[in-house]
Image 1: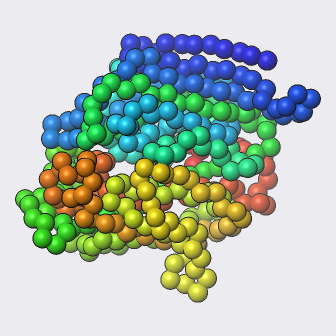
Image 2 (image 1 turned 180 degrees about the vertical axis):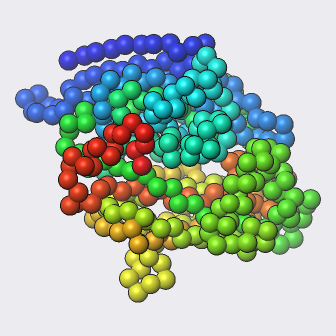
Length: 386
């Protein structure tokens, strides 16, 4: 069975093409797999704000999802070294009007940070536009853990956010994203994603000086590049992690502990840092007799990012906690060709490739004793897949 359609969403927009094929071997019984191709209709030339070397650009796509589905795999094609990463956000019907207004007839909009849609933060917009999938350098096709899928409610729109790093060029780019989905009637467990960050506070290395080597000056520069909300996010994250935002501890490592807050099974973990990242560890219930290391990446490479499926799912309850620890090598800022172009600075959490992050991506499925009908009802509420 083949169905194919194409719709141009506006000048400079992305063309969404869906192709349905039955991928099971001849004679076998399997669900029909829909392939949704989201290809830029025209090249986009990154354009950073004054004083910045990064561009976050968002484009709205209508994938014409007519039935509740599960995403079982995805493949992002950056098609240029300028592409730092990409995130695909779900836009539920309740935020469709906001998304269409921001899209400016298909031209898209600037979208630094986690917030995919502008002017909707007051409505808890981050949780209402959850991640569907993401891509980082070195990662090809992303296949969800066996027996699981990411809920994709009928009628949803999609925001494709792409981070361009102009330190490596500013050529026209034409990205492509491919999603593979199956009907929600397929017996899969719905995946949900929790983001658990820690705030980096990395001073300039010994012997390295400059006007941005104080945290205050560096934060001011961060606000000039990405807006004052970037400073607010950084300080809020310091407070959440139990630090004094006005004088947080600094060094070559950072950590934060987050509550799980729900029953479920951890099935997949992801790690994200930038170019100075060395090691990252994710620990269940750190500092307790029952502490368990879930993931320990001792040779992090920004250019080879991936997700890690756990061999055995780890059950969790609401009182459990996740500890996230990242370690960096600040001397790389003077060694890596791209970063040598940037003035020495005290490094904080920031959206730029010359800033840093420490982000654990924790994916869970509902607990084994939760009825399938209840799990699916929550997953396809058309409001949030978290």
